[in-house]
Length: 166
Image (cartoon, rainbow, N blue to C red; front, side, top):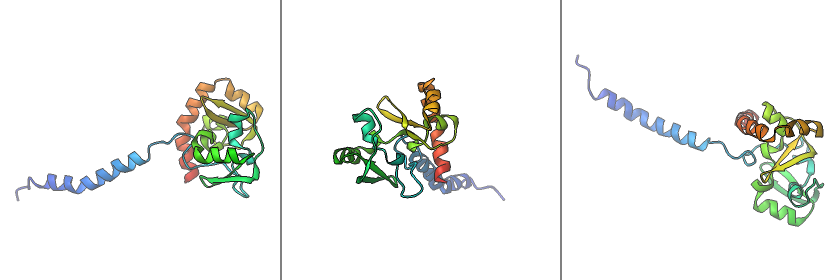
């Protein structure tokens, strides 16, 4: 029996929807900025982000300020607390601007390939982005090479985030 010359074309036509799906799925799985990707480090009880510290205060006051349950906003499955209604409203308008990088996990740990809780007192804003660390001692290690640690954290975060989403 003579092989059909149409078989390869028919086979490709059957694979076309699969290839299109794979391309589209790949496009939607492109990494998001490290601060805006759906994973937030929050307390086990109550789901409060960054231990109830006002994320906007790092930018406006230059220091961590305890948030209040009176001024809360739900975002990315966590409760964010603020020191004022103004801070809450700023965050609600632009959460990616104020949310910490790496979902609020320790920046040093993420640079090393894992996650760790944070101390809201161990922080730094770099290029308009908030980075938190486990402790002031760990932050000192992270600050020994801020650009290198951010580059490593940015490279590690998609894999870590996928494991957390798992």
